[in-house]
Image 1 (cartoon, rainbow, N blue to C red):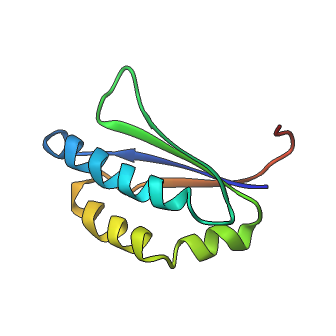
Image 2 (tube, rainbow, N blue to C red; image 1 turned 180 degrees about the horizontal axis):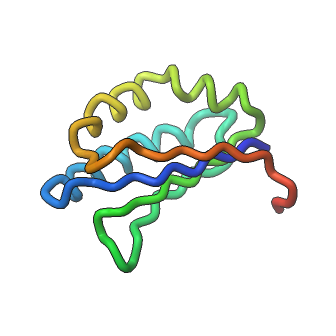
Length: 97
């Protein structure tokens, strides 16, 4: 399994728009055959900080995800709403049930 965690800091005035756009992307991503999980998390101590937790069967499934219309639409929509560049960390799963 291939996991990507993305930390995103959103400008305070764009939080609700970011949530709406991200939930649309997440729902469509869950329909992709290679996607196993897509969680959208908002930090308790900082409502402008988000974590996207994405799990795919294999690394190529993530690459395919980045070419989908819904991902490209999300990426373009949220680009100017971020307070700083998003921070993505890629992982290979060791234990997952």
